[in-house]
Amino acid sequence: MLIECIPNVSEGRRPEIVEAMAAAIRAVPGVRLLDHSSDPSHNRSVFTLAGDAGAVEQAVMALFERAVADIDLRRHSGEHPRLGAVDVVPFVPIEGATMADCVALAKKVGAEVAERFQIPVYLYEEASTIPTRKNLEDIRRGEFEGLAAKMATAGWTPDFGAAAPHPSAGATVIGARMPLIAYNINLATDRLDVAKKIAAGIRHSSGGYRFVKAMGIKLESRGIVQVSMNLTNFEKTPIFRVFETVKREADRYGVAILESEFVGLVPSAALMAAAEFYLQIDGFKADQVLENKLRS
Amino acid sequence: MLIECIPNVSEGRRPEIVEAMAAAIRAVPGVRLLDHSSDPSHNRSVFTLAGDAGAVEQAVMALFERAVADIDLRRHSGEHPRLGAVDVVPFVPIEGATMADCVALAKKVGAEVAERFQIPVYLYEEASTIPTRKNLEDIRRGEFEGLAAKMATAGWTPDFGAAAPHPSAGATVIGARMPLIAYNINLATDRLDVAKKIAAGIRHSSGGYRFVKAMGIKLESRGIVQVSMNLTNFEKTPIFRVFETVKREADRYGVAILESEFVGLVPSAALMAAAEFYLQIDGFKADQVLENKLRS
Image (cartoon, rainbow over all chains, first blue to last red; front, side, top):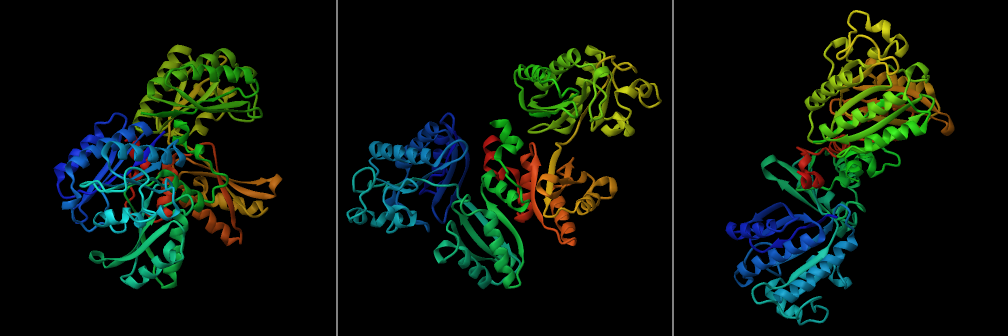
C-alpha cells in the first residue's frame, strides 16, 4: 500500500535548513523522498515523499521536529500565504491505498502533531469534518498574523489541539486529497485575452469543470500564452476532456494548441485514461497493462 | 531486469498435459506465469511468463522436459502450422532488459535445448543469424511433416543441433522480438469489403506500415466487421498512428469506428505514447509518471 505525502514548509531561502529537513525524511526506513524544491520568493519548500502509512507517518513527524526547531513564523515573510512552519500536509492515495486510508492517516497524524508539538491542526479536503473548512484557501485566510484572532472566532476551533497558535510554528492544515496534476496548455498566439477567456470557461470558480483551477498567463520569453491549470481530481474531471474543451474554445478564436505539459509528476492512470478515450478502447481494464499484471 | 517469454506448444486438446506444463513453469523460483490459453482447433497452447534471464531460462527448460515427454508430433494434427512439440520460444525485453539481453538468452537457450534434448533449433527475428531466416513463417513452411527434407536443403542447417528432426519433438524456433500487441478495431458497418480494404492499406505486406499485420474479418454475432491486427514493434509503428489511419480510411467509406480492443496484455509504454500524441505533451519523459518514478 503506497501513500504519497506532499508537505509544504515555510522555508525556502536557507538551503541548509531545507536540506536538514530532506535528510530527516530520507532517514526514515521505507520512505522514498521523490522530490523537493524551494521557492525563495515564496520562502517556501515542497517535499514529495511516498511509502506505506506507517513509514509516511514517521517521516512527517521527523519533518515537524526539524521545522519546529528551525522555523519561526514571527520572522517569516514571503509571497505565498501561510499559517504555520509546516503549513500544509496532504496525504494522497496511490497504489493499493484508498481515500479512506488517507483520511484515517490525516486524523492520526493530526492528533499526534497536536499532542507532541502543541501545534493546533485543521483538517481539510476529504478529511474535513466541517463543510466550511474543506478548502485550504478558506482555512488559510488571515494567515499566521491573523491566526490568534481567527481561532477565537466561532467555527474556527481547530480539529486537534488548543484554540491558540503555537508561538513560532503557528498551526498546520492536514488532510487527504486526490493527486493534483499541474497541467499547462500552450497556445499558438500572443493574445493573453484568449488564454484568459479559455481559463475562465473551464475553471470551476467561473462555471467550468468541477475539478479544474485555471488561469491565463503570458510566456513573455516565447511570445505565446498559456492556460495554466491544476486538475484536482483526474478521475472525475479527466485530462482528455479538459484538453478537448480548451482545443475547441481556442479554435473559436482561430488559435491552435502548440503543446501541453505536466509540471512535476502525473499518475499513470491519468495518462491511461487519455489513451483509452482517444483509441476508443472497449472495456479496458488496468490489468491488461503488462506492467500492472506483473505487479498484481 | 525482466524478460517476458511466450512459448507456443503443440498441444491444445488434453488439459491435463497443458496443466502439467503450466505447473512445471510455476515451480521455478522467480518466474511468474502470467497467462496460458489453449486452442483445441489449433491443438496448440500459449504460455506467457516473466522473470529475470536465469529464471526464464530454467522455466523454458522445465517446459521442454514435459513437452518432450508428453507430445508426439507424429500423432499431432491441428489448424495451426507447427514444426515442433515446443514450436516457438520468443524472448521479449520488458523492464530494464534490452533486445541484446534477449538475443543472448535466445542463443544460450538454443544451444542448451539442442544439447540436452537433441532437438535442432533455428534462431529467428532479432536473434536470427541469416537474413532469409528472420521470419517465423519462412522457417515453419513445410511444417513438421516436411522438416527432414527441408533440413537437408542448402541454407536450412539448424543454428544448433544436428540437421535431422527429433523423431517426436521435431525442431524448435527460438528468438528475440519486441512485444507483440494484438489490437483490433471494430467498424460500425457489416461491410466486410471495407474492413478488408482498410487492412490491406495498413499492413506491411501490401504496402502499409512496416510493423503491422492486418486482416479484415466479420464478427457474425454482432453484425459488424473488424480490422484485426498484430503490431510487432509499437515503438516504430505506434498504436495511435495505426488508429488514426484506420479512422481516416474508414471515413472515406462513410464508416465510423465503433471501438478498439487489445487481446491480452499491452505494454504501458505503448499507451503512454498514445496519451503523449493526443494531448500533444511537450518533452514528455517516462520518469514524469509517478509510478515509474517510485520504482526508479
